[in-house]
Image 1 (spheres, one colour):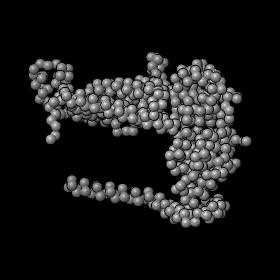
Image 2 (spheres, helix red, strand yellow):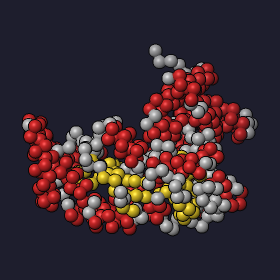
Image 3 (cartoon, chains in turn red, green):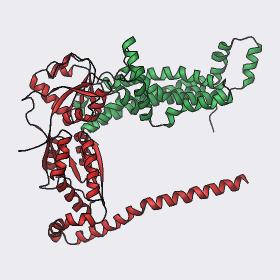
Image 4 (cartoon, one colour):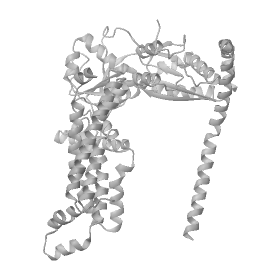
Length: 304
Length: 232
């Protein structure tokens, strides 16, 4: 009796497992079939590829609404997490067949991942340094980079906490500081500000908790684990109850404004459908309704 | 290669060693006492206690880190009480590193010790009692020596886990060079910054250090358990 029960249970669990994997991979196998046929078509006639592409892009916008399914992988700077989530739900209503998958981390980490071969369609960086480095390495598709947003660097403390720090100049009064590492744009900007103010050596001698990305820094300050932190104005605005801005970066301390460029990354495994979806989404990002959303979150639109 | 070694800041190594040693010592005693408690517990209490004690091992370390943050975070009731009354800060400090590593290493020590205790012949304990030994003497002079191979292997595992702890440590203790940046956190930071050569160097260091200490522990514990015969 016990043995039979065990056998039945094994058969039922195996059946459930097979059904689940079958259902799950159903969609994936369809898209891979489409991608492989598209890829073979393109491989056969490379000279005509660019002509086909431009013709396809003209119809891309219309095709998206009735088109085949596409999944885009978008690498975004950590500070863009909240605003891109809202844009994702907005885009889902316009192009429900396109699934957007975000990978949010410090721009330095994302740059490394792209250089190490991660499959990525769009890169939205928090600084031009990483985008330029990728452009020089040949990872970016030509003429797709747009310097889209501008942000401010601010000094924050936990809401309601007492601190004697009044700005970037007297930050050494704090018992502990958190900021991004050198490879994160936020950390690089912070160090640039302190270097301009002349107190970089004193700051580096402080107890610094190096955050892996700017969201880590923000959470550390909101949890009062560190007294003060350097983040973007948009991050401080995302947690209005938990953190307070002490001061913004003094004028002239940053050589260049904080610019967020967005661009298309060369993706070897992308099908034509995916490339079209990428272009369509990039075009969507610069429409007025999306720019309004960015402004709601505290970003400024970069005007050259 | 040589200029990496010249320019490197050796503090992650010292932080890791200190954390590993401290966490192992604490886990050693706590694990033994926890195992003793469970051995003497009634059936129901046994299951519940065992479940709670083994949980940090089963769950992802970030869960342990999350709970530790909830407990010791300066915004949270217990953490703020500790800070205001006793001026004790656990987050972003070295004690935080040790506590995180200990929480993760404790289940390993506990499970191995308990398994070893279960193998102890109860008649030994009864015999010792008839000879008039106190309970404490029985525990430390009879039970623990008999269970020593299991306790030793538990200690080795606990040390290995404490040295290699990353998730809970980085959540609770943060990444402060010189204070809470262990080798594991240093490797992650350097790899994220793209300094693969420095990260690789630290990988080699921790492999060598861990291997040496584990081998040493094995040799030391091997010589005290002469009744373990080699399988021929």
